[in-house]
Amino acid sequence: AGERDLAGRRVVISAGGTREPLDPVRFLGNHSSGKQGYALARAAVARGAQVTLVAANTALPDPAGATVVPVSTTRELAEAVTEAARGADVVVMAAAVADFRPVRVATGKIKKRDGVDPEPIALERNPDILAGLAAPGADRPAVVVGFAAETDDVLASGRAKLARKGCDLLVVNEVGGGRAFGTEDNEAVLLDARGGERHVPYGPKDVLADAVWDAVAAEPALS
Ligand code: C5P
Image (tube, protein in one colour):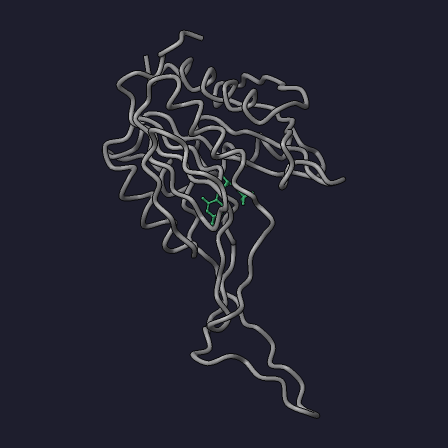
């Protein structure tokens, strides 16, 4: 990979995990720290890209040289990514996005009452941001990258997801056993839409970030 091989490229990265409010003090969320997305942003800046980082509920220092847009819910993330993606060359969806959100958000704190069973929480689907970005159209970024956390049949599930979402690259993490979420290290397989695959052994998230940008830079749509 060339030192500044992303010079002049506009890239958008989502990081962290979305939260879906239940009431003013509670939410449904996930354990994503945002570390892999931030590592991607630092690496892209180092390689010369103009970087927008859409950060969902992270507690990490802003990467120098990137524009950081803080968000919380999936709908906020969708809006910020869609806006930043207009005219961008590359979008990388590293954020862990809630698939569902509560249908109702209570305006006041939900209270427990003696002898009264709690109400069930009704959920509805969130939009699939990645699939929307990857759909064919005049505005489609040249390269759209997704992440997938899989526990079994990692490669077959990854291939199916790449095709289903229509993205150009998919970074497949094997999760479970304390791996990936919140840790400093990651292991992944990078799949491309032309049938290529590259295994990145367990190691620092910075190393995986550079491997992702190597794969992005090698995409025919960017050259
Ligand atoms: O379907 P799954 O959640 O496994 O797909 C993960 C990929 O899709 C990630 O890149 C994630 O950021 C993205 N995603 C999304 N919108 C959703 C759910 C996931 O963009 N509603």
